[in-house]
Image (cartoon, helix red, strand yellow):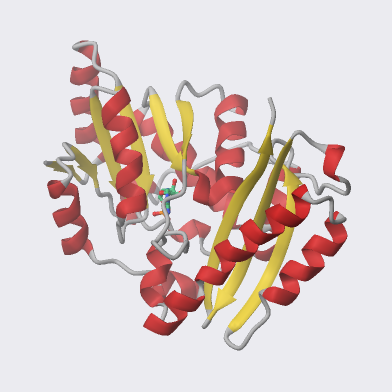
Length: 285
Ligand code: AMP
């Protein structure tokens, strides 16, 4: 595996590969890698000639400084997993490489409603940071395809708009969420849960699926949301939101037939760890 720490060296290498006519797939991550991340690399390896993974804990997307400090950084384990999965290229920059002190990153991008609901409401500034880092990474690497997880559904919607608004060339592929056997969505943050909480956190996926049944049985949307918030309120559990939205606009849905693409998204604080998950309930395009 080649590890690049410098933007210029990575770009020289990519330029040479593009000259050879090779197609580049890109999987951006913040490390603490797990099978969910690796599933994205599998999609990329299937569809592209070269797969580049980046590990960069982007300080600008953490609205809570404590969250940034506590974010896991098991780099030795990450390298091991990347080697095991035969990843060819890792981009592992320092903060100064992404945000050079003498070079302001000016990005004129307004995600509109996509950025102000759900995560945007509870994590002010988060998506501005995500847009900045994604814009920077995409302009450095200029991949043909970009692989991101449905796990961060709102992030995918925003990056899709960023690509369109900034006329970037990457095609975004949203890959399915990988889950633990009990249904808990795999996440780097799961490392911070106690073994007991990791078992109990399966309640999040169970609630999403139970509510989908309610939705199919025509239970009113407001009632579904209320039931979900009640179910997810337990000792050590504090739900932040349970939203039922249109998957394209992320606008709240009031009635079942308001949208043909319905997605339920939630964030729950478990033992002080913020977990997010979502489920696509209908997709009739
Ligand atoms: P992160 O390192 O948390 O920034 O995630 C990097 C990428 O991996 C993002 O596109 C995530 O949506 C994706 N991802 C994280 N967890 C999962 C999962 N359980 N299944 C599939 N993709 C995931």
